[in-house]
Image 1 (tube, rainbow, N blue to C red):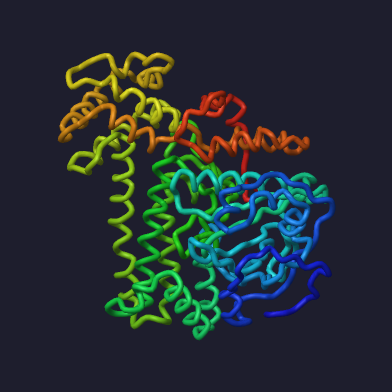
Image 2 (cartoon, rainbow, N blue to C red):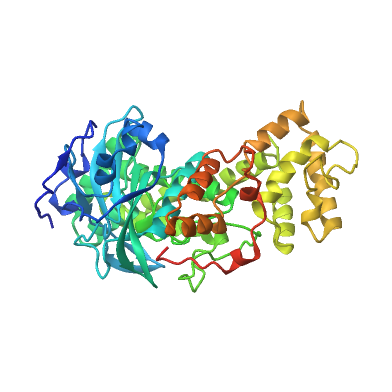
Length: 510
């Protein structure tokens, strides 16, 4: 599968320490190729925090050289650009060979935080583009850039985004749009689908090579685990995936397209396409307009993650003694995911430890929120502010607003039902040893964000960017990088969504 094409004439040295370990796995894993240049590139956005992570000079990030480099218009000294091959299940069906159809891995950079792979998404055709054009559009690139950095700021494992560059080059989706390239960064972009590819094609030697690479690079404890190191790898990936999905659920995040080729073997959130943060709470919300069967609805994400892990387990079977090893490795997910989610829901409620009855307390609240279509993010933020007015005896703390704050109770239509739930919550709060309302509020405000990347906020930034105005993108990025802070002049970013927000449709082309 490996081939070579001529590199661009210009070569730029970024001063980075390239390792490129994936490129050493063998030619069965990838095709070597260079990005396809785009005309008249311009800056759209950049994350200085990711520049710091890679060791890039902040001032240099504004330079014409950086613009050319991260648009794919010049070769980068020390990099070994390639597109990797993988397979996978898409919407529950075996899709066969897939691969990096519009992403080109420049290579791996050594950093103070460990190795980081740098990838250009939208950098042109690859042998795995199938019927695609190898390009990304401005709309989807802005969404991925903003959400990558937003998720990181929320403390959720994710790929990062260094920058977005745009070009007037036309790209056809539902309509004609303009091209863009987003530079993605992660310790590794290896997916469940990489293992599925070599298992389903009978390339078991390469399957073992890949598994050994992942173990030695990212899960070294699995090498000396009792039994099979590959079963230990499956269990470790399952545990990370469980924690990640619990974090998604706790902030109301819908991925939208949890195919096995979109699942990271490191438990990272990757491949931001038709994602959404919930507005009104609806457990069955389907954020992906292409998901006509609702396979990837919000409340199905935990079970879909397990289904995907089962597919990964099947792919690893040629390296294990028997099927039971894989089943045993998957079993802990069933306990880890709900326990991790309950811990996070308790933290959102201001509860330090998980006790008997907490699951029922949470479930009762979520049922009320669903029945009244309560705004997910605003509810949790208001609850955080209200906790200092709650007293041990029945009171009006949740009924009346603090100065400048709206009452939590006003979010509900069934207010008496909410009052009954709030009485149980209040009792649970005050039963905690040494409970202090001020300390609890501060902890809740660090758990329940003020701002998330709602669809309408992204849409406004995208529309301005299409007009050549990137100031709204920068303003939104600044707020998303500090989601737990109440920033002056940013109240509109934390407000209820406008009525038109419910008409926004996002699909796999997003």
